[in-house]
Amino acid sequence: MAYDEGLAERIREILADVPDVTEKKMFGGLCLLVSGNMCCGIIDDILMARVGPEQYEECLKLPHAREMDFTGRPMKGMVNVDPEGIAEDEDLSAWIDRCMVFMKTLPRK
Image 1 (cartoon, helix red, strand yellow):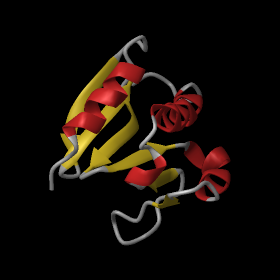
Image 2 (cartoon, helix red, strand yellow):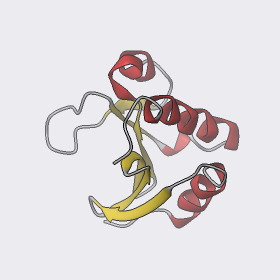
Image 3 (cartoon, helix red, strand yellow):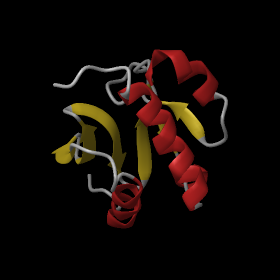
């Protein structure tokens, strides 16, 4: 699998002012980490958003969001967002903001 480089660039722009952001090729796509913790990722043109357990159920109710079942089982705290749900910059920013809310609860690795 590959990942949408245009989507990656849009996420990089949103995270530009966030300290300690790194990238790692994982899951056949791209993973963006904040302070060593997975924040979000891209597989093909789908956003993998790590929103954490507190926001998980609420996020699943949002348009174009669904369970992430990369391993064949849903991964609680992770949602996939289809391209339609992140087509507008405001929508992508809102998803990254949800990820950052959870990132702030995690210790630095």
